[in-house]
Length: 221
Length: 221
DNA sequence: ATTTAAGTGTAACAGATGTTACACTTCAAC
DNA sequence: GTTGAAGTGTAACATCTGTTACACTTAAAT
Image 1 (tube, each protein chain N blue to C red):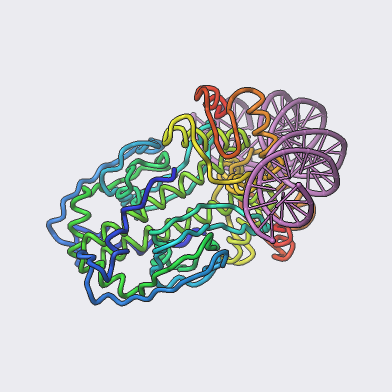
Image 2: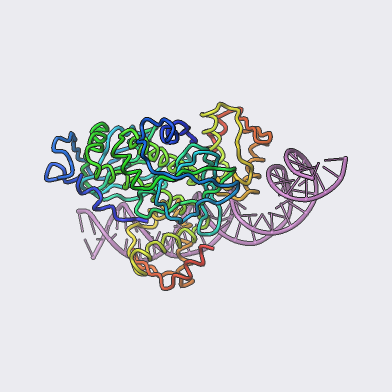
């Protein structure tokens, strides 16, 4: 699921230095944020393109019943919710909170449009990035639509396996994982315990091992 | 949720007639499909822009555990999954099935790119449409993340109220609604029955009435 | 080394949802 | 009007998940 977007926005981020694909007269501003600050709130107007150029943030959605739903962790450099800049109801769909000191670049909407018509490469990058984000959301939708917790775990771990092999590290604690799955923490712990007892997975701190994919796949049926 | 995209693609759809915003030499083809046919399958390669120019289709996702998750009903004219044309893994995220006789236009990817650089209006339309789709998915995500069935119903009905007032028609039968919510049909029926018994909603066939929004809102907490 | 907070394991119980099954209603086709 | 298919209401039961509570472990801070 977590495809690497690292290089996608290099050109844009290197602006002001030697970003050869971008006009030297681009108007932008940069703002610095401290650790653990909410820099955008769900519902905030999104009237410019914001790009995280250093540090990292997490995004999470607060559902109407007050529950948290973890979405993702974002590391610089990457744009923040760029799709919403052009949507009819252009508001942030999530809360964005810094995990460490972070810098955010702001490019006004009309500037974005100007560069896009000037530089087809930039346009294509923008569209491709948004397409990948859509795919991420679709995947997220698929994860949430799995009804059993073990099914969700299996879906998630199988993705990790296909990306990193059958031993890997997950950078989330139980609480964060539970938020990510949209389930209660003790319920997640219970399911994990059972899966460990059944020999389907091995867990040591944040190190996970999947000895046999097949057993995981069976949980999806 | 179901914003009206009706006019967004008129220019494109009127192509060949007098679509003045589009080049007269655009390469495209049109294919006709009968009722109740699957015209794209989840996983199919998406190497061109497909636009539904007449008829209607439904899209649904089959989750890994084999359950159906209803996504939406699409009426012409509208593009089909345009975001995925440019994603790194450019495959259809859903099954697309015709609900009636339907015609689909196909424009090759490089043609789309050519027109986009030629016609900023078209580019903006494309991006805006995708942005709105992202918002739709985000909303869908929010609906699914609500854990109780009554909560989901409330969320959904409140949207309808804000769009159409407190009396409206829902064009889905119970089975389809249950798929849309990602729950079992008898469970949905039970929740609806209880809500009717408690006087929170009134239902007659596909006609719904919400006498008091407040009671619905209470279900979201 | 001590202290404290964060993170984890687990149990008991309540409540919600899924499953299966079947009767009943509605509607369209003939 | 009869028939059959599709749609709806509902019951009994099994299962799963959430809630709450608390003990225990680990990591970080002093």
